[in-house]
Length: 155
Image 1 (cartoon, rainbow, N blue to C red):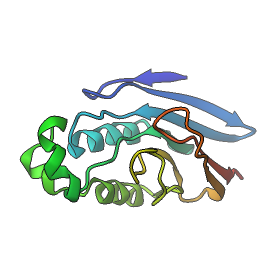
Image 2: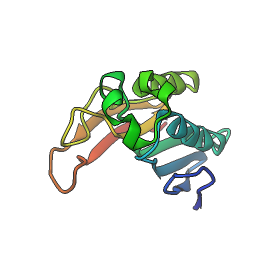
Image 3: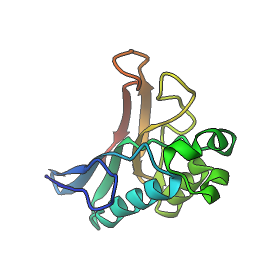
Image 4: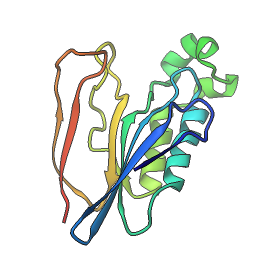
């Protein structure tokens, strides 16, 4: 188990290394910065990618705070720390490109995890090689985020 907080604004990343027989998992839990533009959150995710363990199944969970979309950006950029260039960034598309280029899958893609808007802020990102059996987003209201679950076959 460990943590790191090397990128400004990240609220810390915790990770645990788990061995199941001869198979290894590294599970990250993160909370990315809300009051920032897309560039910083992409940098934060890149830092997590650099901590991936070769030969392990690396899973990233947490609140990524991906809300930036050009149709909303022009209203919020000034209070959320965006640069003017980031107003035209579709942050969701940028993250999905990063997932694909690193052979990662977002099993909750296009699902609402935030109670007040149709946004996926919360993620469980898994290697494409892990077969997802089911996904659950429970609409219990204990906070402004819904509980999420991804069940997969680890074999």
